[in-house]
Image 1 (cartoon, rainbow, N blue to C red):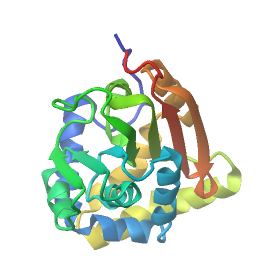
Image 2 (tube, helix red, strand yellow; image 1 turned 60 degrees about the vertical axis):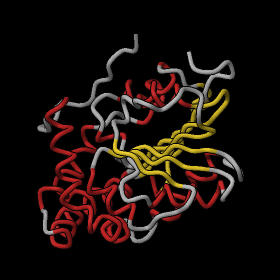
Image 3 (tube, one colour; image 1 turned 180 degrees about the vertical axis):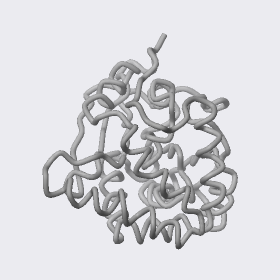
Length: 249
């Protein structure tokens, strides 16, 4: 049985209470979510999305799963990569985020309401790649998340996790402290009309496990050859692992 992961001590709730808080928050901000992503990252999220696509190694005709897909920004780019002969399934637990995603439909994309830690109805060894971008830190049960990602991958398939992180060098740390701790909550609150949602962002990053710890969690839940890199001056991490060549355990 997979061991439960632990995060740093914070003022954030845990378990089901936190899951409900995050779902309600994303339901409220769904209509402005992509605009806010563009503002908060100065458009860099598009570059980071492309790095995720490259890390998956997807080719035309492949299948992909995008967890915590939100309004479908990365999902649509995955769909473009696999082309009309391929398919992408986007799963999120926020009905309003999925409603926004479905406003920009693609013929090779299906969106589904669901729990990333319990992918009921999703067959094992189904996908060539599974991704999650900016969603892992919102999921209390990281073991459940990555064990499910490993389960649904085809033998040798690729799992990719893109997440915000606290930088380690002084210059990036100073920028991070100004931008994410002070400016983003204010700007996000003004644009979304929901200050609480964007006060949550820096708190969720502080609560999240360190990049090396995340790699360990991925490995102990069935993913192999796990590597990770820092992007954006250290404020973003990209983790990549592969499914077992023998299929899910």
